Length: 132
Ligand SMILES: CC(C)(COP(=O)(O)OP(=O)(O)OC[C@H]1O[C@@H](n2cnc3c(N)ncnc32)[C@H](O)[C@@H]1OP(=O)(O)O)[C@@H](O)C(=O)NCCC(=O)NCCS
Image (cartoon, rainbow, N blue to C red; front, side, top):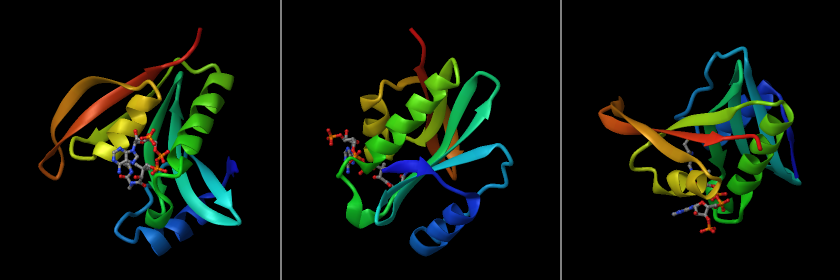
């Protein structure tokens, strides 16, 4: 089940399972969590005018490839449509094949590249249009 979760839950989840990743200090960030008794994955996104921006998505490594990332992304798309947003955007590291495939599966398209965006690694800007 996917539902909204607090920033505190996200901080706890990241420090336990992804200690190398620190939560950003974005007051507009919203969080969804995937639960099956316990929290197995999270997604964070910000809404900026008519656009949602996905900041990060993490699924615990032993629970990957079980459609949890898809469920989180699906709910984000659903909520963004309900809110009447125009599109969803995100930046992804060019080497992150799992994430790129996941986003493509949900209709995200590459719109541009950002050279050396991630410590020397290129980033891809992807957008999924909403509406109609
Ligand atoms: C990216 C991530 C969130 C995917 O979550 P997931 O729950 O495993 O994804 P799903 O099971 O819903 O997979 C959906 C689709 O994503 C793609 N995908 C997922 N894992 C993949 C892999 N290891 N290799 C290639 N494609 C992959 C596939 O297209 C898959 O569809 P399919 O099952 O029909 O082949 C997960 O791998 C993760 O947490 N990675 C580490 C954190 C990260 O890099 N986040 C993104 C940047 S912040």
